[in-house]
Image 1 (cartoon, rainbow, N blue to C red):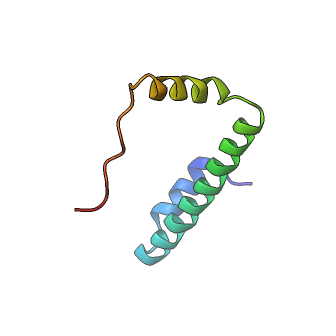
Image 2 (cartoon, rainbow, N blue to C red):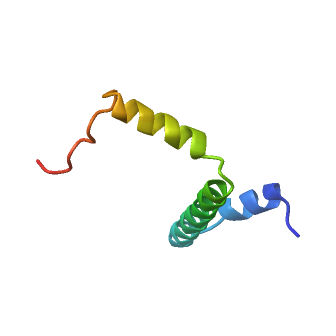
Length: 71
C-alpha cells in the first residue's frame, strides 16, 4: 500500500484534468463519509444535548431567521 507521501507525490504529477477528476472524487467521498458520521452521531444520541440547547434558545427568542436566498 502506498504511503500518504507517495500518494501526494503522484498527485503532484497529475495533469490538470485528472487532478480535477480526483478532486471531484475526493469531495464526493468526503461528503459521503461526513453524512455517515452525522447519521451515526445522531443515532448514538451525541447531538441530543446540542439540539435541546438550540430548541431552548429558539423558544426563548434567542434565535434569528436564516437569511433568505431571494433578492
